[in-house]
Image 1 (cartoon, rainbow, N blue to C red):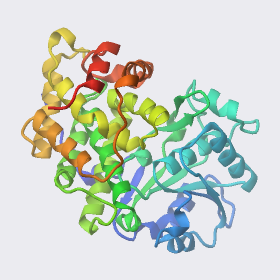
Image 2 (image 1 turned 180 degrees about the vertical axis):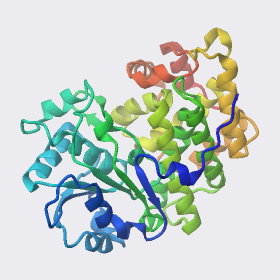
Image 3 (image 1 turned 45 degrees about the vertical axis):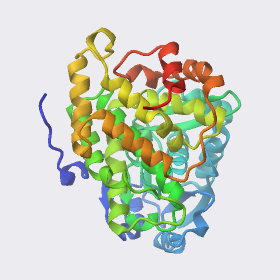
Amino acid sequence: MSVVHVPVDTLLTESPRTLIGAGRAAAVAKEAETVSQSASRPLRVLLVVGAGFSRRPWHTAVVGALRPARLHVAVQPGMPTPASVARLAGEARDHRADVVVAVGGGSVLDGAKAAAALSYEPADPTCASVAGACDEPAPATGLPVVAVPTTPGTGAEATPFATIWDVDRGRKLSLRGGSVLPSVAILDPDLLLGLPGTRFACSLLDTFAQALEGAWSTRADDRAEALGAAAWARLSRFLDRPYRSAEAPDASERRAALLAGHYAGRAIAVAGTTVCHALSYPLTLRHGLDHGHACGVTLGRVLRYNAAVEDGDCADARGAARVRAAIARVTDAAGAGDAPTLARRIESFLASSGLPPVPDLRPDAARVAAEALSYDRAGNNPRRLSIESLTRLLTTTAP
């Protein structure tokens, strides 16, 4: 297979335009003004944040950096739902916002992205209209978004889709389209200060999964594989160090984690995620696992499963050799040597991360497997799947 080198400087000038470095969040007002679709002065900004925003040590500086814009602060508490996205879109319309600035984790970024994309709709947004919009491409126009992640690993600042959770129906929805892609991503390692160790661990697990899935997906190309490998070259340093609540990553670790998450996000923007994410949705909705934790629970098992692909059960038209080569490219970048070794190290990280114990999935395994297969993400997996194979994967103890 050909090897594609992805220079960081070149990558960060592509859409979304990406700024990385300590203190870069101070440029948020300038970036918001640059991408604004209005010449109005002063700029009207909808700032979307999480419930814990005011408790982070840098929140005053971020708000101050957006002055003298006319600022309206909206809170996205927890996972975005049709109701919360409709509310945010309504707040954007009421404020007559020129631009949306999203500062937070993946849920904040996804809620803000969806609201910005839907705020131009003729009718006032409702729960039903938000859910319905996920059945077709997002509107072609929407408010520009400046995405400022405060957790590493969701990749939401780099993807043209937003996750919305329809809890009432027990389904994960996705709003997709060019208008969902942020215009600018600001990766400031200082904004990871104050992040609890277990939250950092969950974010890393999400990045682990996205970087592998983006590389082995049936939709992956050389670029996605290179991005997945580039992410894992930065992730390997974390595998043998658990992050419990009393610990805090240093400056170089914060930068490495943010950049790895961004690379992984760009990889899945090309290739999509696969069965780890498909399994994570019922694990979150039915068993209450945090998204990153839910991805990490099955990642080692899925890695072993996909690494054993043969032509007879390969779902990738390019053949099993391509899948094994993509996995080898990632394991080499991670310094793991082979897939079983990387799987063991991921599972060791999960076991020592301080995250809550996973409930016994055996009684519910077949239903979780069936629900996972109902998501299109499962169709990107390079080795064929069935309810039986996924049930075995969920109930078999890792070696």
